[in-house]
Image (cartoon, rainbow, N blue to C red; front, side, top):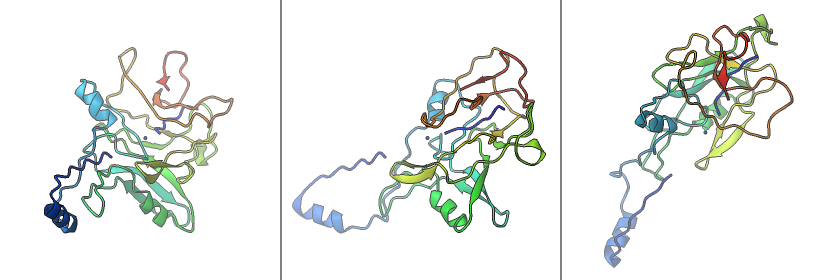
Length: 228
């Protein structure tokens, strides 16, 4: 079984203090203040080096400073409805917040009283190599039709920039995949990969991967998959 999963404030304050102006500044509203800018994301750094991302998956945060779209989709068990979880947008008040992290509060509200699965992890890159439920491969998965199971959406809570978000918790038989890929390396073309993963969650089996794999969901022998 080959799976693809991806697991990721600066506050600048300058005071020019004169007794009367400090008091006025403390009492002045922040309605005219601009929201803080997000820092560069990993894909901004890759792009600046001439190697733009062709797949950028995260359920926790934006991987570009300017990304404002959905990070992932949850599927609700009780009624089969879905909700896209997007990034929190930058705000100037009540506390300056650059945003860019996942709106976990929207997931908690949508999934309250039941549970949800992660059904799509969106590719933030222009290639749109979204990850969806992995289809049957060389070995049949436990879900209907031999598909892999979907990960439960709230199994990996973490904190990023002081805010709760959810990573992806993978158990045996779970997997997300995209076989109709666009722009990824083939054969011996150069590529770079990275992920952030919990090193305490593992077993003795194979395989738990993120990266560039076969496009037929099968093990096509040595040298046909490059993953982490």
